Amino acid sequence: MAKIRVVVVDDSALVRSLLTEIINRQPDMQCVGAAADPLVAREMIRELNPDVITLDVEMPRMDGLEFLSRLMRLRPMPVVMVSTLTEQGADITLRALELGAVDYVAKPRIGITSGLNELAHDIVDKIRVASHAQVRRLAATPASGAAGAGSGSHTASAVPSVPLPRLATTEKVICIGASTGGTEAIREVLVPMPADAPAIVITQHMPPGFTSSFAARLNSLCRISVAEARHGERILPGHAYIAPGGMQFRIDRSGSNYVAVVEDTEPVNRHKPSVEVLFKSAARVLGPNAIGVMLTGMGADGAQAMREMKDAGSYNYVQDEASCVVFGMPRMAIQAGAANEVLPLKQITPALLTRLANSPAGVRHRI
Image (cartoon, rainbow, N blue to C red; front, side, top):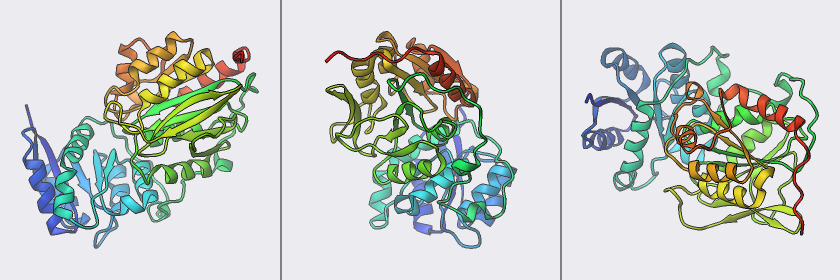
């Protein structure tokens, strides 16, 4: 089997050396080149035709985001961001994902050698996933796009107004699970939602420090309110609640109300937050009041729990392969028999809202 060919782009000679060593230790990978800046990287990519590149953000001669933007417009290919800036500057990471990066790893600010070696498993896993990812050409944007890291490329008022029937119920709760490629897929689902949409609960695989920026970014784009979930708060229509990174998030009931449960418990399916945790609670607590949505992502997290949701009366939408960055979690949900409909990403929200508008009011629990 051919090895995954990787080009490393980083201005630090130490980081280039460490990443090269980590990659070359893998039997299925080879670092075919290492560049200190994007202009050298550009020539390497032309000559070596790698399968994946790892890319730092802060580099000489050309900013990493500007290089990524140009790359995804002119020669789209899988990119994994590896940068210290992605740890504190989560907005920059989100901008990189918006531009087309498949995933990201935050390298430590101190203890680079030990830190990167501790992250070696994550790094090579993400490179493997990226090598199979579907990447798309980035549409031409104004030159200020890359420079405006952290600011959305859309605003809620700029989103085309799509005529949508008024929703017939406020009892339903939409439950979304996603991983690799999910930040942009979730944005695609949430932005068209009307202000009176049912409550939405979301688990996106993300580490601590990223989900607050992710929620704030979505909140600036959407008609609904978007925030990190807080333990004990009511789950209300017109709001979306995102599982905080490094915590588990599920739904429970308090009297006649749905409430958020955010707790520091063990990883499930190696994830924290885990889609499995959220979806299992939806099956148990929401039953037929749930609507499930499984979006792009690697692995099988949430697939069996989504089947439990369906068995409990939920109606479930799964993203199709052609529109996924990584068709892992959706594939496993389909194989588990969890899907009622498999749709392209752009069709999920219209289909979901039409179904909601035509559905009877949600089931009220007897207390």
